[in-house]
Amino acid sequence: MGASPSYPRTGEIFVRKNRAKLIHGVSNVEPILDELLTKGVIQQDSYDKISALPTSAEKMKELLDGHLKTAGDKEIFFRIVERLEPHLLIEETLPLDAQCGIIDPEPVHVSRSSAV
Image (cartoon, rainbow, N blue to C red; front, side, top):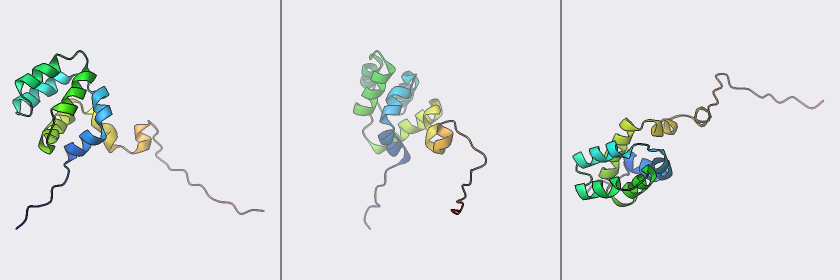
């Protein structure tokens, strides 16, 4: 039997589609790095290199661009972000109106009147 097809996982898709949101939206990178280190996704030298950067945005950019190499790494990262930075995922599951703060419980129905 042949190998089953490889489909992108949720984490891989989320990281690819939301790179800018992750770079600018994660406020506290160290807890994410701690878990990635504990789970073996990154090594101590990567942890030290990323932690030494001055801003959260720079840390996230380095992490995303150079250290999350496999779909499995991205899936683990996604699960950590899902737990530690849930605000980054909320908008992904809401309709566009709710993302913009527009909540209309009763939709407006437009009827066309015939010309007189």
